[in-house]
Length: 238
Image (cartoon, rainbow, N blue to C red; front, side):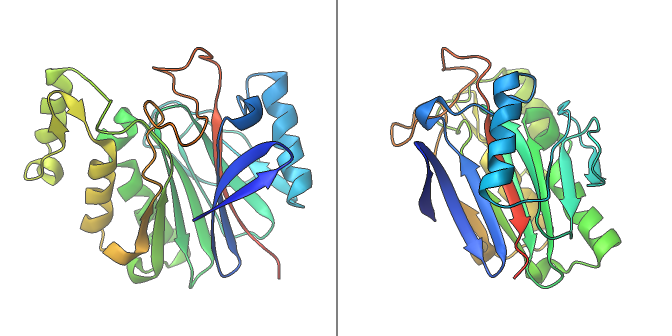
């Protein structure tokens, strides 16, 4: 993990072979809310800065819907592609951004996993789509989990925690303390259940609500409720 600076903006960066993963921060007031002119302009700046043919994203609806990127904006929460120089990404301000990379088949995925998506196993379902459509093997898949509200701060209802723990996959792990739900632990459980190696799971360990290391947007904790970070991945044509 390293920090990449673009103008006055900071991105948390991972790189593996010809795959580049970037998690934006809110430094310099950088906002990627795609429902604003500012957000659309900033997406175009990213496209130019990284010499990309296109940037794919979805109209996020807190679902378990997974799509192969075809250039269209659809209602859903996970995108997959094997096309080079075409970034795919998700917008977050507390929800969990998850990037999956199949280094063998050169397939990438970007997932928006809020509590609803996590409860509906969207990460598991994205892996299944990568396997079915692209022939991915779990031994070749790496996962990158970006900044999100952590189990330290994400207080939810007792009923919601019970809804999670009623699922077999979460029934034998401790996913909450004092009504604070750990979405990252739930997602890692999905990854483990699908056979993703522990060494292939990379976390930023940054909470959007309480971390002081970077400027970040938190829907619960920021004054700017419209602020969104953008987590994206692309295959470089080298």
